[in-house]
Amino acid sequence: MTALAAPRSTRRQGPDQVIPVCLDYPIADSVILYPGAMVALNSTGYAVPVTSATGLIVIGRCASDRTLDNTVVGHAAGALRVPVNSGVFYWANAAGGDAVAAANRGAVCYGYDDQTVTITSTSRSVAGIVVDVDASGVWVLQGLVTQVATANIPSNPAYVISVPIPALSAIADAGVLARLTPGVAGRIIGTEFQVTTAVTTASKLTTLTPKIGATPVGGGILALTSATCTPIGAKVVGTTVLTANSFGATDEITVVASSTTAFVEGAGVLFIYVG
Image (tube, rainbow, N blue to C red):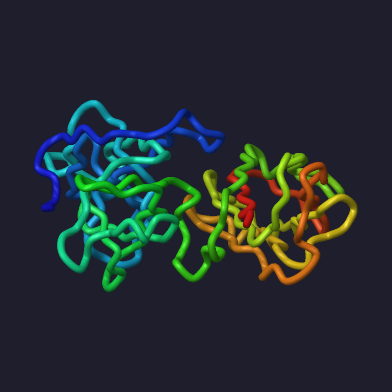
């Protein structure tokens, strides 16, 4: 496929999700975003259409009902804003050896242009996780959960638990940020925190530790600091999970804070990868 030159009706799969379904971002200077386009954040945190380039953070589908043209008289970075959906979206598939195949379900795919994905990573940015593939296109999980480098995605996650943290300022030592009973057995294989509101006050921090029952998981510890929780779209990856990570259907999983110097602002989404 080629890049968009008109609005696109981009299909979405599944119901609304726990992750905020629509977030608003400032648009980069001298770009055009069409309705239905695949959107990314560039290195300065502004929204752009996806291209074959590295360093982009793909965030989902343009939810605007009109073309957003930031090339007209008076254009400037941030002069316009774009609503962006997260979710599972249907994109065109690249051709030939670049095409995503059925065997790539559950794997990472990459942005080719603002309506196309590919399995080829060279000089491209992660677009999301392949959910399904058919003869006409590719269903891709996109949004905050996919804003990671390939090396940081745990191997073969079965599902992802997402926990919105609407106010980092509410975190205190021994505070429980997540509490759930999964209903099925499994293993915690990774954790991650994605920033949705940047921290601007310096020298704030907390450590988040996943637990199964009363036992800390041997890894998956997240060190959130003022420096790592900015800008919007930044990711903090938990330490490698090595031991004490298996749980039963009735076990309680929690995430507990410690070593906290209280934040003033900031928000994000906590992800627990389960195998």
